[in-house]
Figure 1: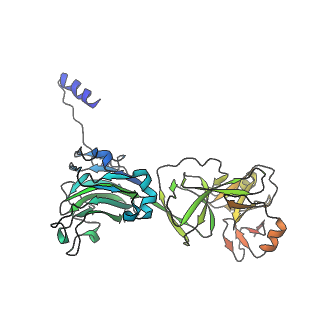
Figure 2: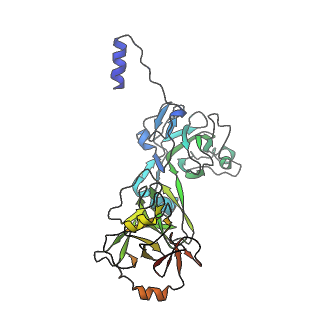
Figure 3: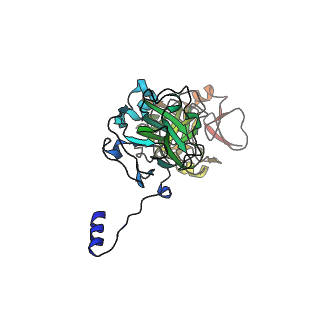
Length: 383
């Protein structure tokens, strides 16, 4: 269409110009993203040009980067070289690609707009040989200006002890929001991937926690937390948890703490599919007790769901979730399991076993109730 427009303009004596993109046109990378260089260089055969936006407009070629097809490949599924976390999260989907896009000092650079806390993992070939070690080693150089004077990764600067850079990767985390410029120290480096990890930190005060995702999240390969949907069985006596790896914004899930930490860092992604069959409802805003009663809601307390009593007061905090089940469910408490169903616990047995357990409406165990709504022995009490 652009060629046709130029031809028409030429025929009628007009001059058609197409403005190149500038840094003002770069979109903010607000979610995790994998830039695969081969997608833009046709396996190292097509150079980019100055002012080209690429990678969903998250990246800008500033001065016309050249390419190469003989600088080796990076296989993200190679756990022995890159580690289990990289292989699990990215190996299957992205596999192996060439180190095809050349950056060179401030002469060939790309720019992007990042958020504070975003982590960049850059995979590249440093063109290693006898002349590219020590202070002559070739590494990515990240700066806040196109002249590369204000360097943001001085810890990567080559020293006399720096080995020659073969096919390697480096990680860097942005401290501030803004535009960054990526070039190199000491000449040619050839990139295969830039992985951008935008994350969200989630509190995990209990072994099991309800959660409403503020963004779409990816739990794949996370060593600290697992995500589950919840669904009542056909006999309406218990709940089964089913593990999921991606959770869409606003969905309610149960998060299981598996790494022994009280918080977990999870990748933010652009979107995720709806969780089919999930009966957990995310609290995108605080939910009043009356709404919970009307929804026939159960809330998580320890390792069971407890029915919200008709006379309950208070609210469920934003960012949590509740189980909404069909009318007519009789038990006051519902046990849950992962994969296999168990029967509902008797109220009497639970009362004897848990007579010292007190939970607030967020499902956090406390020693003594203060002002608010609490669950004691499976029943709701307002203080």
